[in-house]
Image (cartoon, rainbow, N blue to C red; front, side, top):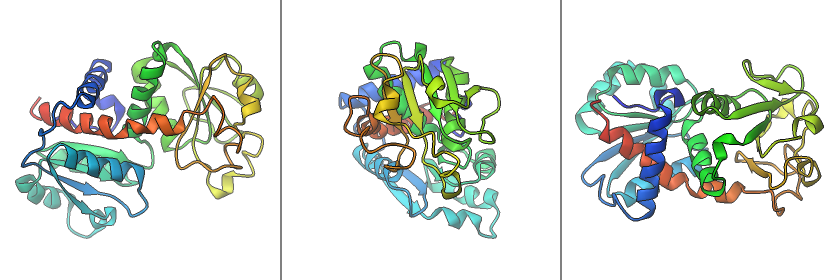
Amino acid sequence: MKNLIRLSDYSKNEISKIFDLADCINKDEYKTYLKDKTVILFFPESSIRTRVTFEKGIHMLGGQSILFPSNVLDKKEKTEDVIGYLNNWADCIIVRHNNIALMDEMARHTKIPIINAMSSINHPCEILTDLYSLSKIRKDYLHENYLFVGAKGNIGLAWKEASELLGFSLEQSCPKGYEMEGIKFEYDISKAIINKDIVLTDPLKGEQLQDFKDYQVSKELMTKANENAIFNPCPPFFRGEEISEDIIDSEYFVGYESKKSLLEVQQAIIIYSMINMNK
């Protein structure tokens, strides 16, 4: 079964195949791939970008999506029984839920692909989309130096998953107490950004704002990075918090453009998972 719960569920070669599929989708191939297929979505009300692009993408491929709020998976009925019934009628299940262990449990009982649309410890579809977008503007995107400015959380940990799988250089800059294990970090952001090509952020939670007050990514800070460096924040981003107002209109910012490909990459993930369902 080809699920996507963690990026490590895929090989480097498989990610390349997903990117090739996204290219084909951009050429209007696979337009009816989901004809007569049903995809079940479990999403919280707060989701915007990921939900819109999954629902639209399924529709554009000729499929039907049926949406449930994520919290219905928290009810008393055992997960294996929920999946036992859905196996009869669904062709794919896409889940956005904090508890990745729940997705693992679903995967143990499913006969159809499970795709993680975000958990509290990772966000594989988001990171695959960013990497696909970067591959279109940077030929050697896997040989660039990446800097993640932010706390240990699902986005940072997902970038760590990607760096371990694909082999690119990733460092972190953050205050003490927010480090991710297993990657190089630098407390001084003005030093950390030197020799970096791609700078990444994640929105901060209320209690983190004070600790990160000296870590705001600004246009001035980006001038210390390599020539032609780019800034790719994770949405939702907040001006005046993890990023400055002036960086949005700068030549460094690629935030909106990088998310355009959410549609095609998520379609490609669905198609790849279903093509390889019995492998």
